[in-house]
Image (cartoon, rainbow, N blue to C red; front, side, top):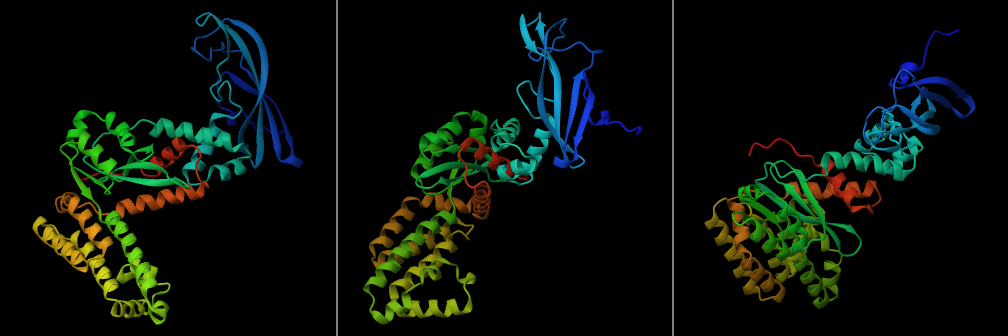
Length: 405
């Protein structure tokens, strides 16, 4: 007879294994756990020891695999009369909650797999659990770690919106710019959305915020001005260029409609030649773009304006940035195209946020990286119906690092 025992695999007080059955055909095992009579049962609600046993019952609980075999525990437990609670209660078991059918360590393993980057569906399939059960475990663990918003150490913020569903369904993301930590996420992109974030922020933290990077979205602007009166608003290059790319594409389509047959052949399919940076174009793409710019004066002007617009964010002196911005607007007005004139007026109206970049060097690469990784999180999960869970997953992906600022 073998002297080995499976008892060390179940190192829990107040219960002991009394029976085991292994079924090789299905690679499964059943272990019965019974109360250890050396210990008085504890109330699940208050934790106080009980003197009176009300009744005995059992339940079946899933546990971690053992040697490649799926493990089912037949847990014999008791219902007790608790004098402290003045009623019948369930006996406390340290390895499983009263209403759960999965042990704590199996739940912890499922959470570890989710944290490692596996989707809920993949973890559920691997552990042969219901996806809703896996999600509940992961969400509970995330809420314990990231559920409460931490405002500690905030000095510079970056605020952006992300699309979470088809149509106009957005969530607002608040990033600690100096550490890369996602501080908060809320549904929508209106003033009321950010109000919820700033309302909970301690006044001392609001007064300590020096700069907030946002796009030229008026609800965000008004909210930041109202709550963070000492903060400079900074408009980042990414969102300004993104807005101007729409202008470029509208003008390109308009020039295509006005062009003759030969010019249309040259312009056809040139959208991304204008949207990409010059350094990202292949040699043949550069040759084609140069041909288009030589052929069409307006498109040549528009592309030159795009290049000049990016240079404004390279200056560290306000005077130089302002002079370049005035030059940009002058060329746009001289061209006379309505879309260019309108965009020049927009830049003039939000000049303060563009020039504030000289005082606060807040580049767009961090925002772009966050947005790209959020898209990956959505793609792994095939979308999120529970936005609270989605926000927790994003916070987990961006815990931040130690800031030297």
